[in-house]
Structure formats: structure tokens, C-alpha cells
Length: 157
Image (cartoon, rainbow, N blue to C red; front, side):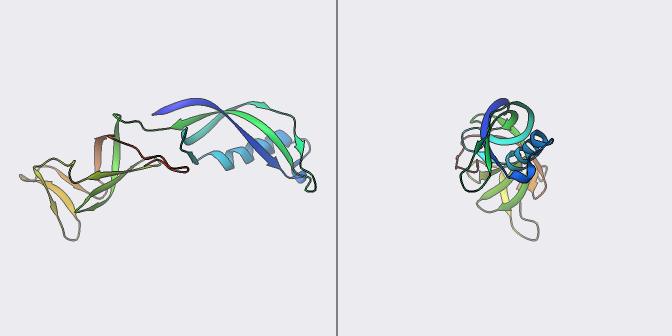
């Protein structure tokens, strides 16, 4: 689910950011560029927790930009098959329902919803048990088990 890992990234910095605050400018640009993004390999970057190393800069010909290799520690979120998560339902239709947990969007097919729950259409579509004791609708909280993931370059579904 959550991991604390070390990643490396080459950061380009404009010459106007050079000076006493070079490191602070580099760190703020790194946080702005990296936090909230997703890589299929590592997952969603939740937060940068520390900077391990800022390497020597390499001047780019013709532009004046400098590329710095930066090694940083961060917390990443990556769901795995078999993991149990709590999620908020965002949309319900006859095919199943969508839910979100943090940055991950989850689809639950109607084939995976218990047999005693039936789809009810109307103003607020939902899945309801035959006795009416349990109702899954928009903004409901559900606990679910991940049975599979699809990893793209920029998202995990």
C-alpha cells in the first residue's frame, strides 16, 4: 500500500533561480513537479520526505538551463492484488460501481457484487439487498478487495 522509497530525477533549473536559494528553489520545483504524479512502476507519489543528494549541475548548451541529478526520499501509494481497501463510491450504474481511495479509481463489476443485491435505477441509482438493510450508492463507504490492477504509464486502475 504505502512505501517509503528513494527515487532519482534530473531537474532543469532556469538561471534566474541561481544564487543563495539555489537548493531551496530546486527542492520546491521538485515538489511541485513530482508530488501527486503517478508512475506505473512505483505508484502515486504522495509526498517527498527528504532530499538525499543534489549532484553537480550540467549546463545545457544554448539555453543556460542547468540539469541537476536529485536523489530524494518519498512516500508512494501502490495497491496490490489481494489488498483490502476502504473506498468512497463515486458513481453507480447497472454495470457495477466506481469508487475512489486516495488517487486510485476502482471499478467493481456487478458480477462481483453479492447475488442478494439488486440494482435500483432512479434519481439515486444504487444496489440494495432484498431486505433493504444494505445500500450501495454515491458517497457510500465500502470495503473491497483488489482482484486485479491495470497499470498505465501515468495511472493505476
